[in-house]
Image 1 (spheres, helix red, strand yellow):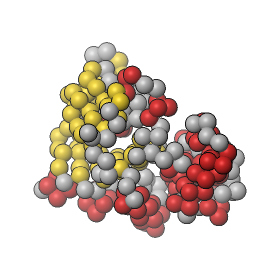
Image 2 (tube, rainbow, N blue to C red):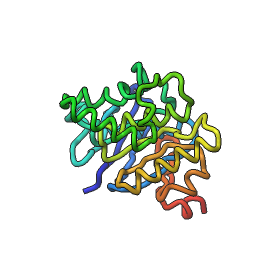
Image 3 (tube, rainbow, N blue to C red):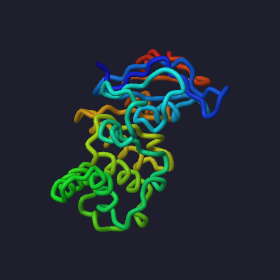
Image 4 (tube, rainbow, N blue to C red):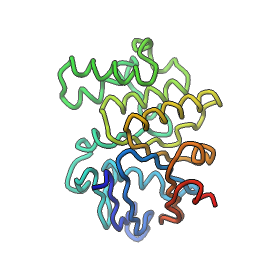
Length: 226
């Protein structure tokens, strides 16, 4: 059974205006998939179906065998984590550790378990020593890593990253991609929404290209670029 199954998915923000049309897709555990396409192709809309943020107008999306229409978003938070393009849309707590602790606390975990997850997640992104700092006074790259740590603390099987290198300098982008590569090697399924074709060519192992709400290409990078 695939981790994420998309079956004849149609979705529109209002009747008669479909953004996604007849999409069929299976994403297996451990994949590194790049979701590409022009602005307005439906990339982010599709990705927000993977954790139940959006529900299909028609068709079905199943995560670990669970139909997203039959369960709340919270049920999928430990299955598929979502990192927004702008980390400032996620960050709102006064310290880095409080930001990362927010999700696990909402799961109702004991304090000891919350602290363990925070330390584990911040260690994974190299920010454990800065846990007491305010997130607003670190650089964009560090805020991106805080957002990733907040998702990792939920221990999801898959992580969706929306334009993870946007706004980063060369060094920051390389550090972020090295982190994402390592998370994939450690077993996380990675889904990257991106316009960065070098990222796709050098890191992804599968490319899904959308055009006007439909899948245009689903292939390994070399075949997709050819």
